[in-house]
Amino acid sequence: TEVPKRVKDWFLGHGLPFTEAASDGLLQQGVRNVEHLKLVPDDIFLSWFVDSPPVLQSAAKIVFAELKKVPFNPLNSVTETNLVDDSSTPLTAPTNDKGHPKAPSRQLLATWAVEAWRKVPEELVRKSWIVCQYKTTEEIANGENASSSAVVEYDEERLRQIVEQIAGANALTLYDDPENTAEDEFPEDVME
Image (tube, rainbow, N blue to C red):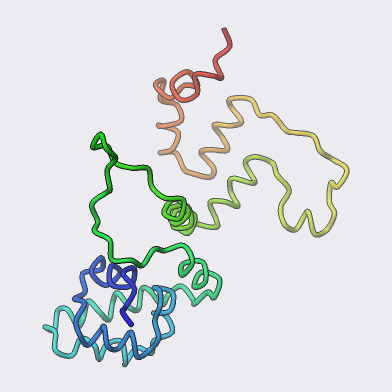
């Protein structure tokens, strides 16, 4: 059995050496993906770096503590195992007969989507729902405004106030930039 490529890449991507001790330890602990790393006891993880220089030992301690700040989620463990291709294929993109890179696989696209959504803070999603005037979880649970399905449209000034309230005054600089127009971003929205 071999340690999955995804786990090796996590070590290397965080500046940690992927040593024989780490490889043996990961196999002994049964780590099949990065989420499983959170279940490894601290002392066992750090023991894999006893032969490393003190700087790398400190880095390992910091990186591992940062990883464990997010509690283990069995759903992430299953999702990551199913979506990540652990084959040892090279990092260069395969090309077609014309020398152009081939389109990524659906599995890789799904992995990117999962990873991107993990990076979106929950608070940002909540705020976007508020700005769009969707019902909050509490309103849905309490049945508030159950019969109301009206969409609230804001004028330009009210939108500016909401943007400033949520994202701060600096966001208004981008919001007010004359180059940020519907014509640039969504040409199909321009009425002729």
